[in-house]
Length: 244
Image (cartoon, rainbow, N blue to C red; front, top):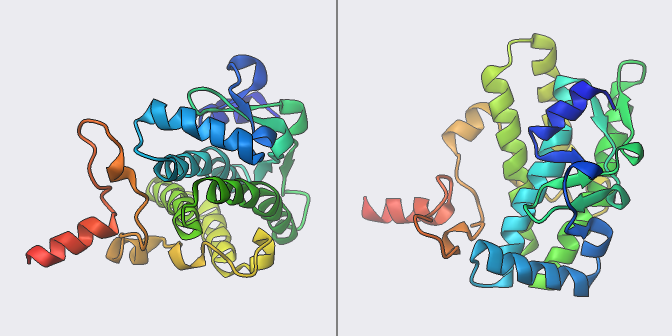
């Protein structure tokens, strides 16, 4: 993994293992008892009222760390780091610590990009994100729809921000192609019966016209001063319509 890539990953709060103290290995997070213990600590840390809110906030954060960084790399560098759960650890600040030697960087330049992309995304979702969300759902009893829309929102965000500043037509084409692949992927790519993010993925004009979520991520329930509804919260949208 080049120094350029390592520096770019730091923008997503991803660090090689010696740079940050570890809190919980992702392999431990996949254990229900250890996951519950970690969520209980996080609940106190973020001042959440219950485990469900904590699980939702963690899924948003984790999707940013793992999913957003991967999709950004695919567009920006035409390459991606493999992030096996065995190589990943969360820090106390919920940053990602990785064993760089296990996170193989592979570029699509010398490969069939479509096949490369499918392999990267299958590893990302089937063997990493789906197991993490499954344990969060099992431990907290939160709806899987909320968790998966949390992932989709991160995807929408990273693509929206990239499109807003990207001028290279080749990268724009990559982004749109990757988005449509994700939107139309079968459930098998996620190790599920159906594509769990399809209903929530939006970019471009569709996102501008309909920015609101379908589910509420529960952020407004955090017991912190100044916390309110997200700008794209469906509850906020309903309340606004009722006042009209």
